[in-house]
Length: 339
Ligand code: SF4
Image 1: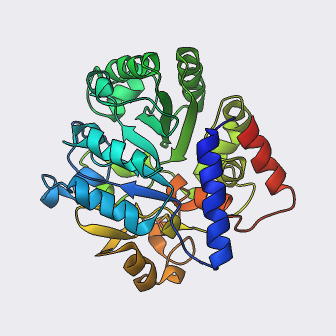
Image 2: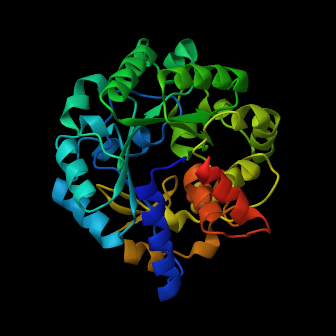
């Protein structure tokens, strides 16, 4: 099974409940950012640039839990900023698990080896480690030597302690997909449980403030599709956590609508709208975010900033939620989950 049974059954029950109650827009994954501070300054990161004014602010554990309760998403992705720098991360994680949530701690893993003893292994908890290439490439992207080696030490420590570990890779214009194959082969040997992948989003904040000509690291929609299409058979050799429908979308083999409302972001500013990537407004509640956002104004063809967006948080929910569903998709998704 690709995901723990508890996650599959929790998601299935949740989706049935939404269907029975006729709810049109609901969250699947809460992107919880308890802080924006980070111990790295990655080249492609919009957060540390966009939230520079509130970089020292943190949500309280109580506010994080209230947000999780209010929106009700069955999965919580704790990101940031660097979540392992958040004082109270172990308390927050334990209390979310008590609420039967499944948690992904999205980390650069610089602190992972040190912090592993603070957590208890359970099928509800994953460490999702950011790795964009082998040592030289990854260290260049995160702009600090030694980061790859530290992340690998953290992964080894987490796996040895019985935790589930996945990795998350962002693909840029210069990414060599063969190197991603080498990276995943190496991580496979270490015992990593699965791999997430997404093309980079061309953040305005990165484009306008990064002095290194960051615009050139991002791809157009056509370039993303070509890169993924050329690498599709290689990617499918690995235990991908991205669904086959989302992979088809990345390769340009099918279209999907954006379902940004399904992966809402909560941070120190409130509920960020419309999505993890675009911060046009912040709202007090998830209900307010959904009601006040004119969703028809967003997505490719509706907003110029969405033109080249194919990112996981906008379009993977569409695969799960059956938007644009084709004959055979159910079988494809079931086989993917069961293998
Ligand atoms: S397409 Fe969707 S996820 Fe991507 S930037 Fe636009 S609103 Fe956000």
